[in-house]
Length: 235
Image 1 (cartoon, helix red, strand yellow):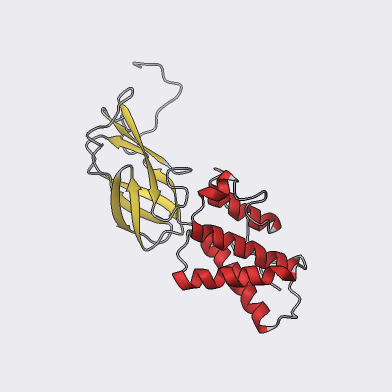
Image 2 (tube, helix red, strand yellow):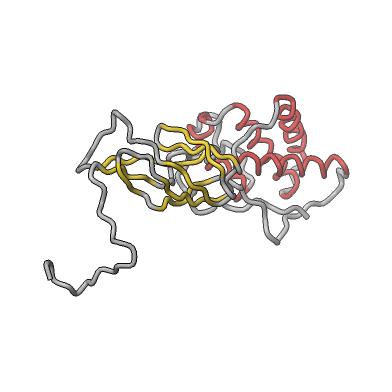
């Protein structure tokens, strides 16, 4: 019994080329592309990514759909990948693990009958920034904010707009010093926004939090005070 791969976690759904390849593999072991190499999503993948997803889909079809003629395709893909070195995104790492495991089982026992497991599957452990606290501040920078994420490497490179910051994390949070706003920032109503993401997040600027620089920082309530929503202005 082989644990199958999970669907994409919240944050997916941008329809990037590799995301589509991963979803095709996860749902129906579809060989990528479905209708030939002219598929624009297929041609946007690197040669190594195409080899990976074609190989993983072939192994899946051979193992679970009674298509034994696909085993040589899967084995050749794995050999070519290993000859160069497996260096993939968090999505590709899962596809590679599936390809390697299925080929290994078949090599050990070519007559083995494989079935997909019904239990918890394996999902991509993609490093991701989820939120910033606070998510706005003065254009001068130099102050500390809190970052919340998931699957963050202990030493992470955070892309704060065009500035790269190296920070230490506990896996799901970190603190960092906000850099100054870019000198060429384009301001709208006194604000300039930048995207913040972690190195290794396969979508880069998509589905990542935004930090807003302010020419005039928003007033913050004094500690221990609570605004009275029923009070009239000036009294």
